Length: 218
Image: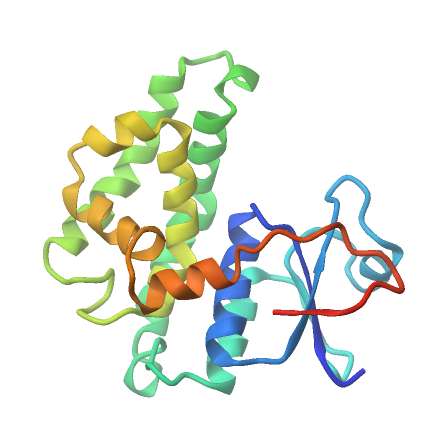
C-alpha cells in the first residue's frame, strides 16, 4: 500500500474534519465511502468499532479518532499554520474540542433527533446547545476566527458540527442572536474564499465503496 486510505461517510461531521485536514495538508489519500450500517470487512479488520473516520497509513498504522487525524495531517504539512506558531493553538483547541465533541455533540443529537428523546421538547435541547454557541460568539467578537484572526485547526474541527446544528432549523439559526457565528459559518460554506473552496472539494458525493472499485483520491 503506497497511499493512505480514509474510510469516511460524507455527512458525518467527524469525517468532514478529517477530510478537510487531509486535503489541506496535501496527503495523498484514497477515499472509501462506507455504509455505516454495513461496514466493509476491510474496515472491521483494522478498527474494532468500525465507524468513521478511520485512516490507514501506508505503513499499516491506523488512526481511528478524527481529532487525531486532524493533528497528524497538519503535523505533516501546515502551509497556513493552522497549528499556530510552534503548535501554540493545540492546547486551546483541545479545550474547545472537549466541549464540542462531548456535551455539545450530545445536545446536537438530542436537538436533531428530538423525537427520539421525548423527555423534553426540541427547543429545550436547542437551548442546551446554545451555551456553546454563545461561547463561540463571544470568541468571534474578539477575533475573526475562534483562536485568532487567522484560521486554525479549532475552526476546521468545530465548524462541521455548527453547520449541522444550524441545518436542524435554518430559519431559526438565521435570525438567532449570533451574528458573528453566522458570518463565520458562512465563510466556510457560502463564500468564495479558500476555506469554502476546501470544504466544497471534500463534499463530493460518491457511491459506497466495494473491493475492486477504481480508487478515488481525496
